[in-house]
Length: 343
Ligand SMILES: Nc1nc2c(ncn2[C@@H]2O[C@H](COP(=O)(O)OP(=O)(O)OP(=O)(O)O)[C@@H](O)[C@H]2O)c(=O)[nH]1
Ligand SMILES: C[S@@+](CC[C@H](N)C(=O)[O-])C[C@H]1O[C@@H](n2cnc3c(N)ncnc32)[C@H](O)[C@@H]1O
Ligand code: SF4
Ligand code: SF4
Image (cartoon, rainbow, N blue to C red):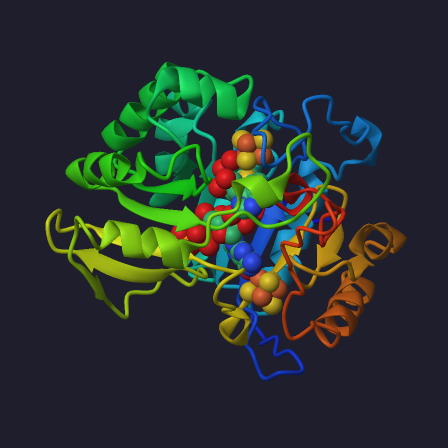
């Protein structure tokens, strides 16, 4: 059998879903585990998958390679916290061969930043150019409160290491009513002052948590109106391939993205699917339907069954999500946690 690191010429096909959308973006959750317990994401006593259920790094690489053959051009590793998966850099290095061959345009990560100090240099060396780092506040005590287990100074050292390694950073901030809405202008100045773009995100009702999401939910239309009292925001057509709509902030010269699944549905331009660390393929972040690729992966050494399972799943990709923040019921719209698919 050929070694996975041997470069082979690859012919790529195209995946098109029933609504004519080209699927060329794969998000891979490499672990459901995390060293933080953000209150809007997980319960403090979250139960994680047993290790025996995880795909091996070799299996994850094989899955990614099949998706790239099927037309994926951008790949994002996420989690849980992707950088806490054991030997994660082995997978990053393996996948990076597709950057070198030209089959993949971008390999990137979404991370809480806690392990960046250790890994930033190696990520850059593997061809990662930009990463998203999630921070909801710049106040160390509030940071500890929202992440339950996180230390802001460690994340800051990670950001410095990433900057030194030449990685472009985008800051992800979940907008939370009564928690950080007043702080977002300062965070924006801070991020833009360091040359980072920023995106703000509406809370999505996924997975049981200890808190009540209806209390935390802040529609970004309101936040935008608040920001417009201090800043001049100009809509721009800038796109990263993700769901954010961007504005340019005249006073800082930086870009601010709004991810608004609740107030403005962006599903018509959806280009992505997700795989979990157990090999489940989710065709939509906001729906339960999934396909078990692990069975197809393990059923034979060849990739024909896998390719067929992927085709069948893409043919079922739904038009969009049904997220609602409903005050009458505290039940989330989707029962699985965000950390299963990594957002
Ligand atoms: N509803 C919905 N939310 C998404 C989707 N993709 C990403 N998000 C959310 O967007 C937020 C930021 O996700 P990231 O992993 O940083 O990715 P991104 O902002 O799409 O990435 P880039 O634009 O490529 O930088 C997270 O809260 C995700 O859950 C999607 O397809 N649907
Ligand atoms: C699930 S995390 C996984 C990657 C990494 N651990 C991190 O925090 O960046 C990906 C993104 O989803 C966001 N997120 C988590 N739960 C969310 C929710 N219920 N609604 C909206 N965004 C959420 C996080 O803030 C983070 O930016
Ligand atoms: S948002 Fe990211 S860092 Fe926070 S608990 Fe979820 S997976 Fe962990
Ligand atoms: S909610 Fe579903 S359809 Fe909408 S953008 Fe996200 S993955 Fe695509």
